[in-house]
Amino acid sequence: MTDKFDCIIIGAGPSGIACAFAMAKAGLDVVVIERGEYPGSKNVSGGVLYSTILNKLIPNFWQDAPVERHVVKKRYSILSKDSEMALELNFNNFNNPPYNDSFTILRSKFDRWFAKKAEDTGAFVLTETVVDDFIWKDGKVIGVKARREDGDVYADVVVCAEGANSLLAEKSGLKKKPADNQMITAAKEVISLPREVIEDRFNLEADEGLTMEFFGDAVKGMIGSGFIYTNKDSLSVGVGCPISVMKKRNMHPNDLLDAFKSHPMIKKFLRGGKIEELSAKMIPELGYKNLSRLVANGLLIVGDAAGFVNPSLYREGSNMAMASGVMAAEAILEAKGKGDFSEAGLAGYGKRLQESFVMKDLERYCDAPERLAEAPELFKEYPDAILKMAEGYFTISDMPKREAQQLARRHFKDKVSIWKFLWDMYKVRKSIL
Ligand SMILES: Cc1cc2nc3c(=O)[nH]c(=O)nc-3n(C[C@H](O)[C@H](O)[C@H](O)COP(=O)(O)OP(=O)(O)OC[C@H]3O[C@@H](n4cnc5c(N)ncnc54)[C@H](O)[C@@H]3O)c2cc1C
Image (cartoon, rainbow, N blue to C red; front, side, top):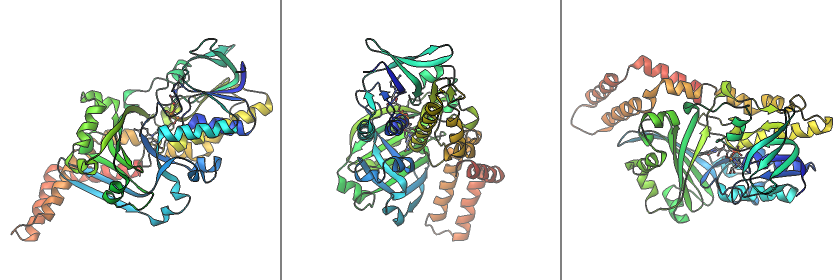
């Protein structure tokens, strides 16, 4: 290993590898240092990969990458204790390349493949190595302290792509420790099922995929949601809620996941499945106004470590991570051209972010977490009241329909203030749709 690189990247997730790929392609000497046994080993379980950026880096990547299914169906549902109200959307056009840039993936397979692509392009990926700290000299980051013998490694610039648990970014002073209401704690499992069962149960053909999001009683009426995503021969199943809410209710993410899985509307989707993996992770929802400083002399922060996750219904994290990684690479190439890796020399990173969907979307949804926190009724009282009213509408009895409907509406009005309900719906539409 050389003792000085053009760039050191901490973390082999989507942001770090996209950054490494773009720089290696431009001919820079790049090392990615990853604490896991292999890229993705610390990111077991799955999610939806939004791939507009990946498709630019590796055109038609799906022909080679270990993607599971392309998402053609999206289902959103609200649960009460014993009922469900769901909206399912099915888009045949998403069956055509580039498949709406939405694929279910299993991170342990995908991250490994993506890192191999960066290696093939010339990047060096060093695994099973924890970075403990940055090396500073005269107010500039000049390398990192890796936890191994002779572990000091030097570079012109360091990219911190360490993910949501951003201990190094916090240590650098660029980022404040996020508050409990700015972090989602999530538990997820991969549950295996035969491919034919998945296709029959979820009405899918060939490699079509479905994502399902569940609110309300899915997470005990708390702010947050549960999800089921279809993979080829498994389901990714999980729940996530803000740490502050979980602490208040004295709940553990794994207990919440067990409760979700045993909800009467959920357990039938999972019937006969076998748990293959369980993991717990965090998702940053810092909000646009609370983002960290992104650049210092010799240092850039990308991906989840910087807080780049869209908190709305789009739930875009991986694409923002890759976009920020690529923009960091472009800014570094620009800085190298000028021979200036100071904060001013790397300022192209911030400029690119501001002009891209990353900052525009974060700004658009800047107050989603606060708006939702202001209306806890959205997750418990409203779903219960709406579903009870719907049950009243559709319960068959000898009562004349007009009377039955009036009774159902009265029940709703007794439980919910209509004006507050309409106001909350207006705020939700503005902040998360
Ligand atoms: C339950 C859950 C569901 C999600 N679902 C979706 C989804 O459906 N779609 C979506 O787009 N996004 C989703 N996300 C968010 C998405 O996973 C992240 O936005 C994305 O992974 C961020 O990429 P990253 O490269 O910034 O960080 P990460 O993917 O977290 O990668 C960081 C890497 O750095 C390594 N690392 C950390 N510290 C060190 C250190 N000190 N030394 C060496 N290595 C280190 C880690 O091992 C890890 O490999 C989900 C997240 C969770 C938790």
